[in-house]
Amino acid sequence: MAENERENGDGSQIRHKNNNDEEIVVGDDDEPEVNYRGIRAMPYIIGNETFEKLGALGTLANLQVYLTTVFNMSRVSATTLLSIFGGTTNLATLLGAFFSDTYFGRYKTLGFGSVASFLGLLVITMTAVFKGLHPPHCAPEAAQCVGATPWQMTVLLLGFGLMIVGAGAIRPCNLAFGADQFNPKTEAGKRGIDSFFNWYFFTLTFAQMVSVTLVVYVQSDISWSIGLAIPTLFMLISCFLFFLGTKIYVIVRPEGSFLTSLAQVVAVAAKKRRLKRPKQPWLSLYKYMPPKSMNSKLPYTDQFRFLDKAAIITGGDEMNPDGSAANPWRLCSLQQVEEMKCVLRVIPIWAAAILYHVGEKQQYIVFQAMQSDRHLGRRDTKFQIPPATYNIFSMLTLTLFVPLYDRAFVPLLRRLTGKPGGITVLQRIGIGIFLTVVESLVAALVEDRRRALAAGHRPVAGGGHRGAVSSMSAMWLVPQLVLAGLAESFSAIGQVEFFYKQFPENMRSIAGAFFFLGSAAANYVNGLLITVVHRMTEGSAAGNWLPEDLNQGRLDYYYYLIAALCALNFGYFVMCARWYNYKGSVENGEHEMSNKDIIDIDLDSRVV
Image 1 (cartoon, one colour):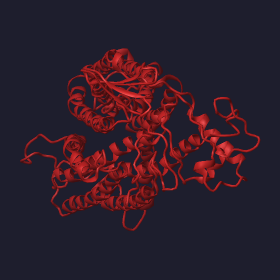
Image 2 (spheres, helix red, strand yellow):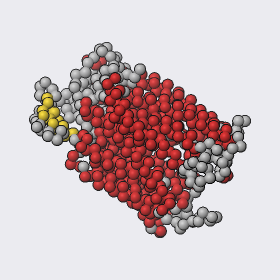
Image 3 (spheres, helix red, strand yellow):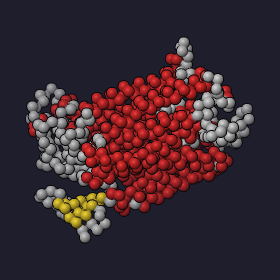
Image 4 (cartoon, helix red, strand yellow):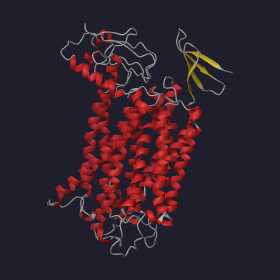
């Protein structure tokens, strides 16, 4: 039997549950506005994202080998090309987010991106299938190989370009689109959003594990044509699942350019900078809320008070009959000012995420594995674990811990703290940042042990020109990889949830892009840090920390440096977290909230 529940005393909004336990929010005219399917939409969305990641990661995971063995590119050229490709892909998410939130909406942007990614993977697969689209095979013993022709490189770059377009559209929108399926104004909806974030990263890690094992094996040991066709097929399935669920999706329409509103606040605050700030701004500032805005009404906050002047009403300011400002470049509403403050408050937290990525992604783990004993059991066996495969331990940790955290730890913490997520999102991010300090210290200790065994004349044969292989088992690298997986399960998932909840609702695709922008910035910082350390220590008395032969270097010192930077970053983050004021929360008791539609209200939201 259907169940009705009035939301407001005046009957202005009613929540209705039908026989399928689907929530429909209706307005005063009793016409359905939003039908939140919640968990019923997840098979299509999670399925789409899983196969999309299997398709994209299944190709990206082994592109460096593909370029050097099939396209006969040098390692430097291949690495440079993929670095540009990766950086451009992450930056494209900002452009995709802008078009999504401003013009097309998340559904259309995701659909366009899925098709573009499929076409990009198809083009790259064609370069492997057709002999005319790649250079002739080059034997390992050949002195010189034939490079790709301009036509062959054009086709390859076309595939890369389509993948950049696809990733730029998909990455900032998929999380926000999944969260759109839950009602953020109910406790069940909030819990559903939290669980969705956790399961999103679970499927992402599952796709990574399949990509670096089964798909890479097919590509390297069986056939590049088949190995690249498999991810392309996965991407086709992803498109099919996405469009199959169209009829049950909640599709949020874009509200126009959010940048215009932000620019208006800055411009008007600058024009009125000489005005005196009112003593009770929460009472006297200009208040106007568009009746059909998707954004939640925000209370006044005392941070960034210089922006308050944009909402001061002067004698020359005129109003329209509906109460809106006649000239928004002369007068902004308190709502616009608070939305601008939301964006500014997020930036310091985002900056802390950059060094988190630097600490969590250890660039030398593969080289450490190459100069460690990778045999399983007896050392006279031929089989060795491939160096890059050790990264699977961090992925496995994330895959196992996220469901455990979601199903066991969160309910327990929820009973103890009374918070829907068990702990605040900033506390979750902080735990992950702290774990990067522990991870780097463990990595330094393990590297010191590996190097000592290699220097103690107990090497294992097979090191080649890059140095002897230490007798230390590469399994000693597992603890730091486990810590990396735990750090990601806390901080990475926490960052995505934080950006999604703290940005204004009409900027949620931009919120999705922020995570990738942090990762892109970390890549540049990591590269710069390695270059600076290498050049500064190359001619020092203590020797180069990062030489080709790790046995002759001091990689442990480099890890200690990373640990110190992560410790400073943790201290910086704690200060930012104590200062941070969650969106929709009241900073002090001198004013009240008057709207029940505020999302994520938490009167005691500061992280101590």
